[in-house]
Image 1 (cartoon, rainbow, N blue to C red):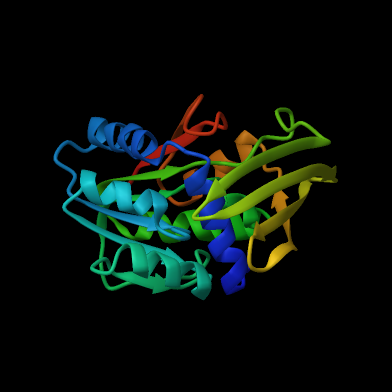
Image 2: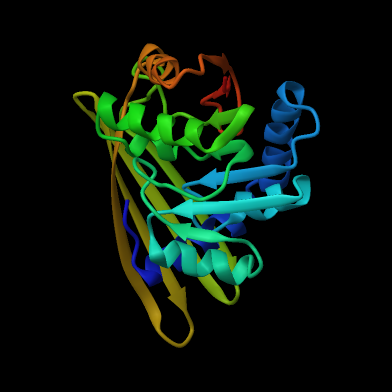
Length: 238
């Protein structure tokens, strides 16, 4: 998933401006981690994006770090978290010289894996970056049976003197979601301009996620609900 600098900034402004409950979401995930590893003090957030969740995880854990593929997303994260180690890397093959009590992957970023092999590779890398008895938490994309074809999402807000409109349309193409996201950005000086973003997100079944965790040596529990209603997979490494 790639973003240029302007699109990354608009994406960040929309999700911050719409009042997404990052603090509550991070607290929910932290509680799940501590149920399985009391005293957990370090966390790695994979696909950390602009650092919105990571900023909140930094209040929950003594040591945090982030990984993301997008340099433009990380540039915004570094502004938000100047003292946090942030690494540009691919979740399928990243290798850091550190291990953590917990590794998270939020906001359904795992759905950008194209197939079972990529899914298994990403989960294996997350598991490999936890200490023995560490916790991996992954927020999945919708399952095939819970995805709503034709779904339209919308937001309209004013942030920093700009009006931002976001409209998304999601359709199913085989085992994937094809999502088109349109942004209208308007301000008094420049007027209105249009940005477009397109995502292909795999509709993995619950069983395919579970198989990836099992292959990594850390069978996962599936917890319904979660921050976005898509549930959470939570696993403890051996």
